[in-house]
Image (cartoon, rainbow, N blue to C red; front, side, top):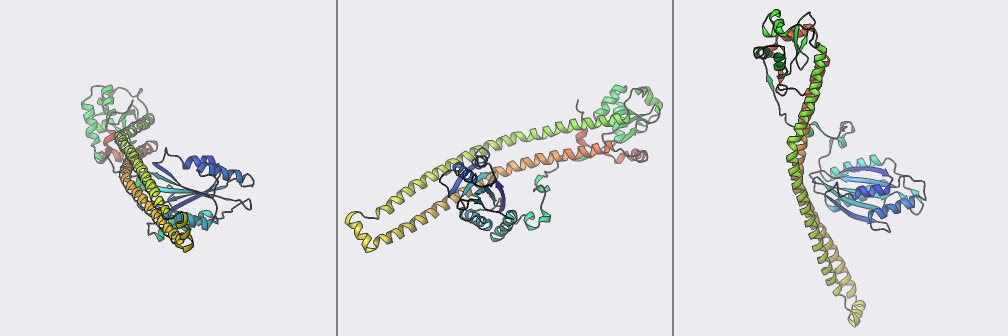
Length: 435
């Protein structure tokens, strides 16, 4: 399991984090040992008050124990890991708190030790505690035959973001459609009668009219920065083009057209990103409602189990207590040694009952985690789809903006015009730009 530790201060805030049931499906305080108080907040206040008698500013050592998502980890395995952490860090016998959290189909634990030695009134030194936790983490993965993360195998392989591309990449929703730009421009020309209608027809397909470098030359600036001469693209003489479109004095420059393209791309990306989120919001809301109902159902099941186990424990304790006689019969049990045998029997039965109840509760937790993991996996898949789609849009936007800000030279532009039949444009740009 992954072990992450830190030396902490501000015990009240730490207690609030550990007991936060708003961000966690389940919060279970498993152990509060070595304190006068029997609750987390009171225990942390004890640590803080004792630390005032020392120079220690960070009296808490907090470690999170995160097993693999697909692993079934028992309570004993968590306790053993906590004990081994204490041994490795020199915190054996120190007061500690252990809290379990369940969130998004995953169960993990938080253990907090007091660093203050109450006898010597000094803080326990924790040299190289991160390296020790990492070494112990490797041992736990090896011993339990869990698949070890890349970062634990070799520090040079550790991901900076701790996520892989495959985890965030969704299937592409859009493809490319080869467009004959010359034919498209000719269609726009045929459907127009003047400059305004021709310009509007071009804008529907992501093109902008501009004035070229040559005197009275009309050009079209594509969304990717490519420049096409209107006369060459339409197959008409410059005089015919000028008669319909007029002089170029009032036309925007090529640089202005590129900047307008960049603005339109930003607006279009924002609109499409919002649309992508909107398409998934209804599905996410439905899953969130199912998850909320399932969590409540699981809480009711655990409450019923705890109540049933408490009643059974009470009955079994009464049965064991009834074996001890009173009066002269009890005195005879004591002097005959039968009393000792009854104590041993009761102790053994109490231990077996505890193990039985723990196993029963662990089985319920495992079954519930599997149920919630189905919904959590669906929620994760939706989130990945949204992130993948938005990342694709952002990548295309950035590529186009890069082309607009760093246009190709004139010779390359001429070759591009000659090979316009091989040019491609995105379907999603073949629509009316934003206002």
